[in-house]
Image (cartoon, rainbow over the protein chains, first blue to last red):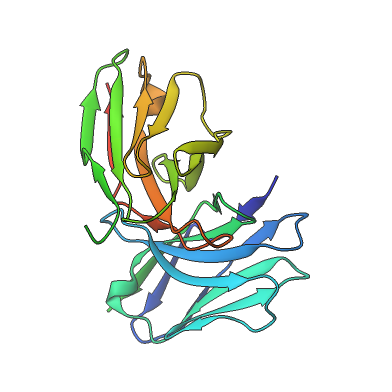
Length: 112
Length: 115
């Protein structure tokens, strides 16, 4: 069974600064996909970024980028130029085909 | 509609009653998923539909939980004889179903409170 671990229950960052959220996972699969989702207080889960395990290049979406270390089974999310609207719960997730397996989440607060 | 919709938004029920939660996926999406999110926790997978069939229902916690999907669109999650531990947000997601691990788009969820 796959497991996803987020070791930081809460983090805070000043507006315009950079923050990195950690995620590790455990799997015996060789082909899989990793995701970061954001959940603001509205409860709506929003996809932030996606990484295919077979791709060596780290995914980037505007201010969001990942550091994917396949051998270490690590998948961290870096948010640059943090904005107040980035305040949310962030979930790391794993998929090897259909279902998503989620971590426990990291509550990120961006302070003005 | 443009996104996944769920109804009701909130549901309060008494222990022992049955409840039905509804999910309308994005039009054309053949894959549909149900997840449960307990307070302060991550999402737990419940069941996956591809079309009208459910190839993976291994996440359903007990036989009190069931789900169906008709017409490759609407899905209903039914919880019979609700218990207080069923209190959670129930989230539905859909994806195109054509690609492996294609992006899942989530609805706003139904918050279920069992008194």
